[in-house]
Structure formats: C-alpha cells, structure tokens
Length: 532
Image (cartoon, rainbow, N blue to C red; front, side, top):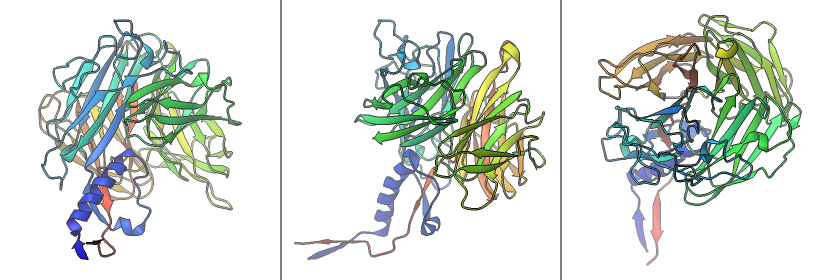
C-alpha cells in the first residue's frame, strides 16, 4: 500500500478552481458557514456572463463595454476574456415578429442571425454572426474595451473570462432607441447564469410589452419554468409555462402570452428545472419608453433599493412575499442627511404568495434617495420579500422609465462598466452604520490614467455623486466601488443621455462582483490511499 499525500497548496488551488466558477455562476455570495468566513479568499479563476439581444428596432444603436479591474493579489498570468454570439430561437409562446430575437436577417432567414450581422467597431473586435472571433476581447486588466453596434439584429452574447481576467469581469450594454415603441435609453449589465430569478415589477398589461430573454450558455439543453404572481396570487396559465432553451441559444418570451389575466404590477419567477440560464426582462411601455428590469436580490427580510433620482416624477414600488408568511414592512427613504418615512406610506402589508404595489409619487421631492424596507416587528419571525421600483422622469409625452431592483450589499467591490464624461451619477447608501468606500475611475477606452477618491457615507443616508473621471482619458470608462470599512453599502449607477426634450436614462444596480471566493482551511489530513 502506497500513501500519497496531497500538498495543501495543490488542494487549495483545485478547490479555488471549482468554487471560483461557482461563485460567478449561481448561489449566494454570502458565507453561511462561520468557518468559511475565516477562510482564505482567493481570486476566482473563471467566470461566465450572458448578454441579452439588445433590440429589434431599426433605429437602435448599442454600445458594449467590457472591463476587468486590476486587483492586488492577482498574478499577471495568462488568461482570456471575450464573448461569442448565441443562436436565437423564438418559443411558441413568443411573437416571433415582436421580440428582439425574432427579426429576420437580410437573407430572409428567421433565426436572429442579425440583419447586418455584428461588425468590427475598430476598438473591441466585433464579429459577424456565426464567426469564431470573440467580441470585446480584453488585452489587460484595468483597461476597458468598447464597440458600437448599429444593427437591429445584434445577437445575444455568451462569454467567459479566465485567469487574470476572471475576477470582477463585467460587461455593459447600453442601447439608444430614437423613436417608436420602446423609445429611450435601455441599459443592462450582462449577468451570470443561475437557476432562480425573481422579477417583481413586470407587467402583462396591454400598455406594456415585457419579454423575458432566456439564454443557455451550456452545450446541453436547459429547461426553465415561468410563473407569474399578481395581487391575488399566481396568475392562471394560458399555455405551457415550461420553456426549453437549446444549447448555447437564447429564447425571448412575451409574458402576456403566458396568461389571459392583465395586470400592471406582477412578479415573475424563472426557475431552471434542468441546466442553468441567464434571465433578463426587457419592459417596453407604449407611452413612457422602456428599459431592462434586472432581477431582484434573493429574498430577504430587509431590502435596499438604491439610487432613486432626485427629479423622479413618479415611483411605483412592487413587493412580493414568496414564503409561507405575510410580510409587514416599514418603508423609509434614506436621503442626503437622514432617513424619513414617506408621508402616507409608513408601512406595507404583503400577503404570502401575492404581489403588492404602491404608488409613491415624487417621493424624493428634489433630493436623491434610496428606499429601505425593514420588518415592522410583531410576533413571529420576519418574512422575506423581493422588491423593485419603477421610476419615471419627465412628464406627458416626454416621460422615460427605468427600474431599480432590491440590490445586495457590496461586500468587497462592484463595477459599472459604461460611464461617460457627462451624465453618470453614482448612488451610495449605508442602511446601517457609517461606511467608507473607495471609488476608482478606470482609464478611458481611448487612453488616460485611473483616478481614485475616498468617500464616507453616513449611516441611514444616500450620497449621490458624479464619479471621478480618468485623467486625460477619453471614451467610456469603468467605475469600481470598494468597501473599505464600516457598515454595509449598496450602490447603483444612473446614466443620462437626454435627447429631444426626453430625459433618457437607465439605472444599473451594483451588486458585489464576487471576484474572490472563500477557500476553507483543511480540517483534516488531505491524503489519498492507493492500493498496489
């Protein structure tokens, strides 16, 4: 019998390789095991991101920006980062002519190959549909790459980053639609695949067209269940709610085709029955523009919705209680100086398995803020909820809409990839104790040097600020927020690109990038016994 002892270094490396992938492809970023909290944290070695098809509009233009921050402790070893087009399929319950993935290309083939195909933007190396040249390949951490896509048939993208590019890799797509249905600025951060998503704030109403884009990054088919919950519980299904997503493909599904019931404030749950998927909802309002609705943070007894604009003309809060108990919540607005209770909206009762919505009006009253939902108290344990806020700026025919979901705290760092020299606002909220953060502007896509500033956010307040700009740099740049000390901090980024009197804007939450993973120390002899 030979006894072969594994080195601790080898075991840690192998575990980091496995858990590094898991940290960016699903599950919570929190460590439930106290022992894991004291474990060594190592950079992830591989990450996956999925970008939905941006738009089928003939008057749309999309900017893609990819970035990986420089990190202490990350060796300058080999690695790659890039994305490839996904195949597009229209599901039976989707209108092939209405969704982003259902437009026909110039040859007449219906398959989302993209009318003109992707093109080389001169900066990031765009590729024609079906090619094997990666989109937005990174050359080194700390320097963003960007490219523009003017085709209405731009495909969904599936990407991976490994080695030195994996920790904190982020990709942002920002689409401008000049006219017609969905007119406005639509932005979203490409997301990691997972098995469970909550989207409070979706709609099956006649004035809205909400498509959920399901993307499968793997080489085997995935199957996802779609369930919609309204004010009285689950909506009746008018068709099969189970959707099959072929390998390395994307499927858009129009939510109003899943049920005959019409409601303006409902909650969608996407659950992968087999495999894993990326899920993103594109909401288009016939009168108030549209935007992407990101998934809410996982159900929690207390939630934070960061970054309500100071000039919001209306705000609609949508909350769902997925557990077996009703939720009673306190509603507070964390402003620049303190937290207050919005007049007439001191509390909110949400019945189990049902969606509740309240109109908060111009809740910010000219000052930026963030919504804090906490248990109201009483007997029994607090019930977890998911939540999102629909925000409107402008009035009449010049309205524009965006969405802010409940957003998890930044444990270490988070990044918004696409920022401009004008129009970017970073919102930081400390729901508990005062916190200190460092905000770093990367070099621009066309050069320059990074610039960092440190900010202190008083407990119970929101600080809305113009992020620092890169020194002597031009082009889109990334902004990274690092928590240095103090209590938890939540963040979002608003990008404004006004046009023709319309206050076009989009808001992206900044959850923790999960760029590192906890590797527990060995608690026993790591050895393998081999029989002769």
